[in-house]
Image (cartoon, rainbow, N blue to C red; front, side, top):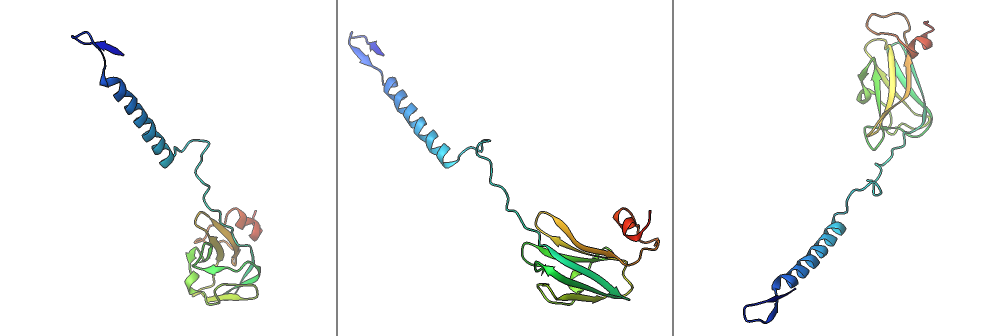
Length: 162
């Protein structure tokens, strides 16, 4: 806006042009920041985490006395302690995966074996992924009341206990 100075001449203050330059500079910097660091708005959700496929396998668990044998009767190969999906073997609630002898990976037609110090009561094989666990196979060898093991729920049905 023109200003009158003491001599009667019209002059334009520097503030008008400086304001224009500052607004243009702010607009350019703002655009650069939005492009460099886009806001995480509802229309721009974060990507979904990767999904993991739990292997499907037909597993049979048997025992003769203290000898436990786990048979792979078909399906996906199962890996011991490696990759995205690995298996664990629990005997009476204790992880004894590393004590079982057999091939890795466990594939159709192969088996794992272990001689437990006493007759096992329960054996379970589960698959572990980064986000979940899945029970592949489990069995109860002794369905009689035992003060050390509580038989409940699904176990009751398998043992015929009502």
